[in-house]
Image (cartoon, helix red, strand yellow):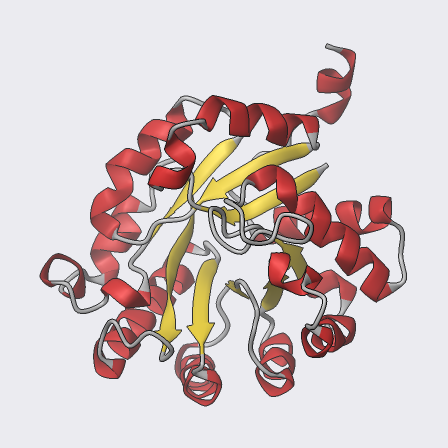
Length: 270
């Protein structure tokens, strides 16, 4: 079984053919999906998807792009913690720093990042961290948070940073997750980073509808395509595809403690 711990099933690109997308995910042995919030105020829409499907869960949080929006910037850790009590909410975020698009101020993003870290620590739910072109500031906030409040569960999602951030994150107890970007033919540097991440800290995801892997690059991504990223990761790590599926799935359930592992023996005999 594979898991797609980071996709956006509520986005318009995936809404029109959601039934087909979920059917193809099942055929690709993607047993669990987590659809990730980009605004706290969209949680009811995410919950409607999750409550209709036993194997779909969601997060609650504010994407750094949206950190300065009036309805999002004032949200407290208390509010996120309250919303995270819903049985289908299994993660916090995505939150973090994005200096590539500059859609929100660095100050607003950092404030939101720290708020979500507090919520992750208080709930014990993993924080889905978005970081792009912000390695040093991300390291600084992670180190500050660990020094002041101790460890908290988290993933550097859709990893595209440098080797220093990945190494420091692992030292701090975080997981590192790779998307279809890992499969891109000219991305040897990212594959070298993946090679250095310990097997027990690796995850795979799609970030669908974005970043479709080879051979679908440029097309709309969907959860079934996580199998292609897993195949590349297996090759990078020198293990079989079955092994990488087992390892990343075990890592997921160790980190996402609120998600019930499906009984695959029952589904196989059904």
